[in-house]
Image (cartoon, rainbow, N blue to C red; front, top):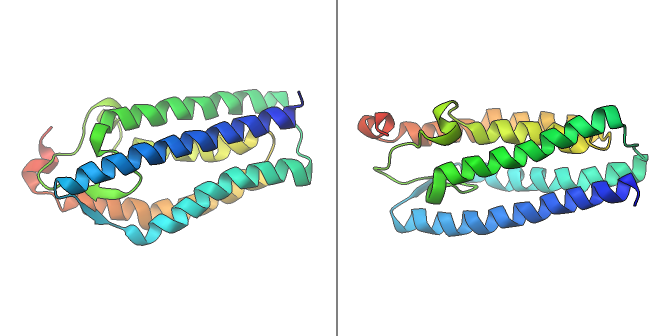
Length: 180
């Protein structure tokens, strides 16, 4: 089997993992709304979905159209980072439990989570997204995709998503922000 075929399988597996995330996210969002959850920052959600879908499609297109090679000295370390990012992503999801979803939903009265990777970072899942965003394409030398995703993701994360999440968390009563 060629390296391009194996890379295609990796990208498709990543796409299936995203679908599993959406199932978990939908269930958890419903749980949050049933408990009075309030969603904020909905305007940036569509562009985020397009960007993350585009990452996967661009990986496949760049390998096929630009005939990017698999360079072992780059590809193997990037594969390790891409796989590690999945482990860290699911650690974030498990740590947030029912409160994890792909949207910004805060359940009033519930304190922020401070277990798992949230002991160390306020937004560890976005570290995962950044790592995966450059590592996955670089598994097969898709440097244009890695660069484009990294720049566009930075614009969305820093300009929209993180401010929305920080505003949502700041809206919690002071006792809830320090509890946990």
